Length: 337
Image 1: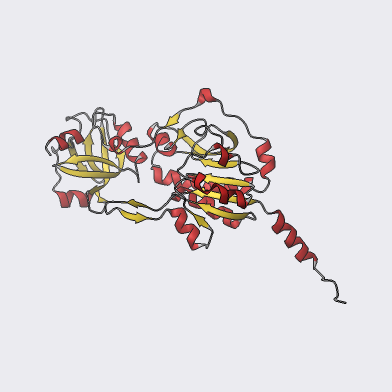
Image 2: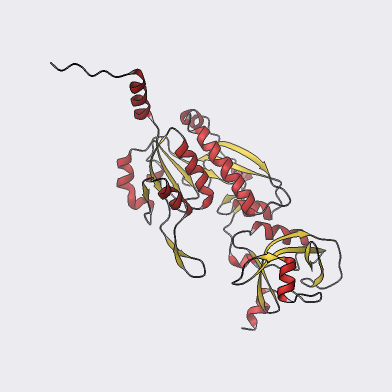
């Protein structure tokens, strides 16, 4: 007669832990979502599937581009899926028997059937302190509006646009020099840490979720390329904030000597009022000094279309910039075409 199998306590503990591990589906697309995915990989959950948007043409050459989440998932050998619509994969999702969905800037609205599929629902990391800045561009709109505080919200998703109950919020200050890229990186890391902590005891957090106050809500509309054209009749503060908010996408732009000029960074100048808005009034260590409606800003990093970004000093030397030249609006540029 065969002797009964003998299992060590460590083996039994490991088997129980594996059986009880939280089954999580992750859905995300841009670089903002990658830290959260990496946090899940380091945690004790079972990551049963990763979803991201299909590969699409991008850039000037319209080459097929893979999302940052796809690259991170492939590098780690994670099970990856890219349906056009998440509902197209509903049967497969049901077969996974997920406990929870973690959603970070996925790029699709989830249907009621998807939202109700996981046992614990769907949790989203949103890059603002909800209900302020619901919508697609919370980081950029916060900088543009001059907010001094931003943060992340862990939210239990419902069918509204970022209207779900709040599970946790973490604040971070917005400095006077933060572009969207820097603030976004900071918020992505905060969100990833918060998600990892929540998954230690998700039921307890979900049970303490707090409804949002709709009377305090504001909307962060998606950025458009039309918005990225600098209007030099605006205040210096407004223009400087726009330049920071639009870096690295869609990037602030203007026209100088019939050439498209992309502005990557700038600082506030003086209260000087000596020329028409858009006029270059000086060149200094701080950059190219440009007149606005109420003062000046210093353009410090610039780029001609099709070339690399350079310092203001290199731009001046290579483009024959001098005082008296004037940046113009996009309408004036395209009217000549």
